[in-house]
Length: 96
Image 1 (cartoon, rainbow, N blue to C red):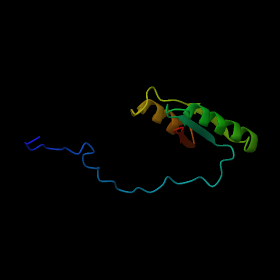
Image 2 (tube, rainbow, N blue to C red; image 1 turned 30 degrees about the vertical axis):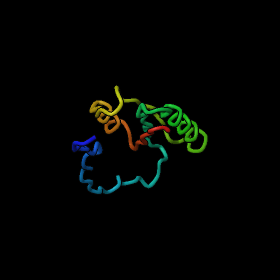
Image 3 (cartoon, one colour; image 1 turned 180 degrees about the vertical axis):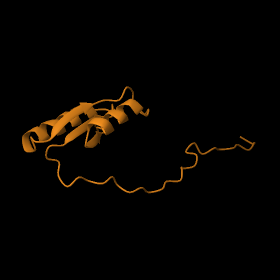
């Protein structure tokens, strides 16, 4: 090969990331509604089901509700609104 070749880096440039504060935590989960969000990743459904079982056994005063977005990797405004309106806290399960 006698000519020059151009090699492109497929990784591109990483976006600038700015830190954000964590959400405030309630002093207790007793009597609270906890949404377990299945993010539709591989095995996330199994993960949130195990979380639901754990809360049922160890913290029965916490009401758990499993919820799923319509599709993965897309913002689901309706899901967010439901969690904000009806829930006190949420855990997003992303699976393995």
